[in-house]
Image (cartoon, rainbow, N blue to C red; front, side, top):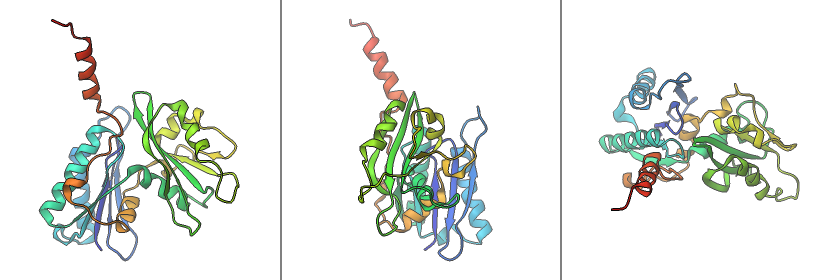
Length: 252
């Protein structure tokens, strides 16, 4: 199956193409500090470059896979709207994938070296002093990213509680945690522990991979376009600001 996958949950734009045989090819656009994300301007251009390089026409795509978050409001809106538009115009299947699950898959698979953990906490910086996080483990048959704690927004000091809430492994042993994502780097001081490992800042494990989006999508059933929605995990900043302004407005 030919799958185009992408993720825009973080400031980066990640795009990948899976053609069934051979390695998944991918491209990234990581804005420099202080620069605006290039989701709206780079996403389709990067996808076109991957298709062109593989000699595949847009019409040959069989499935579109998109990271649905949680993440930035604008980024998710761009990514999901683009995915739904492509699936409709190309008459191909559409799958929405958790961006946090996609972040956990390479960590549990040992993509950056030997696997050193049996559980992963995926953490995306949510701004406003919060982090989006979810916990995953490998099952006894070697399957990766079995959800233990569903995605939601946390205060930094609550992140360690997520780890302790998962308890020991089914065999009673202590879980070995790998914590990944830009939120793991930003809130590292809240996640220190003997059984917790946080990769170096340069590790690709901290980046949401569109290749993982493709891999997960291949094992999922397609959805109707209107069923693929962004998972914001909280109200958008603009909505909160409007509510605050309304609450502070003088009553007539």
